[in-house]
Image (cartoon, rainbow, N blue to C red):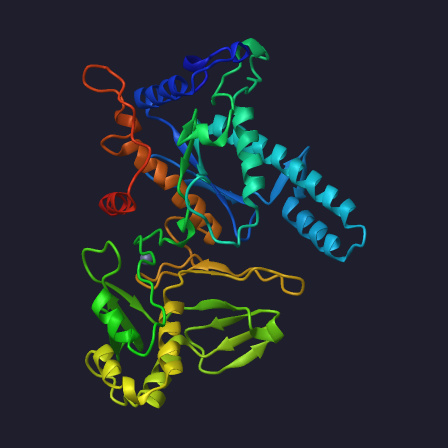
Length: 439
Ligand SMILES: [Zn+2]
């Protein structure tokens, strides 16, 4: 569908990107039968994509670690990991560096081809992470510069897609303006749109809960400060055997509730003589044990209970507990306050990932929402399988918003038939409001 209206002769050069984007946006507005591919740099996967329709439903999503080349599946993630390990051991590491560089270049060219095919097959626009603003965490498998090479290769490829049916390069459809520089790319180049991708994997896809409260220890009066700043309260729910915390996070109009009966993993760089390891909290666990490099902890609920009983001397878990905790401040140590804040922060960590290392090839990577209980480890209506999948889905969803909003791409032609440049930036609060209203 993208083919017919936007055949601009690639060879002539001097294609104005603004004009080109305008043609694409007008075409999308007039047809409105596209799909969206969100692409995320993963923590467990080099890249991950999620293909969604205009209702926000996932049609297909998968890891781009493995790519089929000539009928054979190549696991680039594994190959890169192995090459990296060898480089660390090797004395002639420059040879290995070359090998890694080649592997990455090979990966980029194959993954770009796969994504372009996917876009053309599905009439889909592509959404990438805007690297000009904001930063993702340090844990991404693909570094920023490799992602930039990938972006550039994708733009180049889309700039000159050869239509296999026609086999005539003069009529090759062009889906992106020629690449000049990352600054000039802005928020759109042809069918590629860019969105801020920070924390996209850490939003609950079911209730849109996200961490917008940032408790950290700042002296023994911290709990009182949190109460004032976020209206923080805490209660024990006897029948449900769990604690509930309520607060008003940044940008929230109403209080939200999060619950203590969640599973979690937490990285700790100090474990195993500073080699690092994970604390693993299972909500049904009542004992502590060691498992290789990791510590299996008691449940968060039980740890909170013991902390309140043993340290804060709160024996009756009745009524609002934050006030009681504040009243006991003088009787407890700074560490007790830190432990309480630490456990609260663990509850707020919706994404749980164990990054594999030499002796641990763990598959742990799940989203478990502390507010609604959504859990990627269980079958879910959305069909989201893991944290990286969630990241790619939420990236795609942002462009669904850019299409459908009042001043968005679908509405870029006004009553008089004139083109109004669609708004391609947004405030988080507007976006989340839209997602909530969508239901
Ligand atoms: Zn949720």
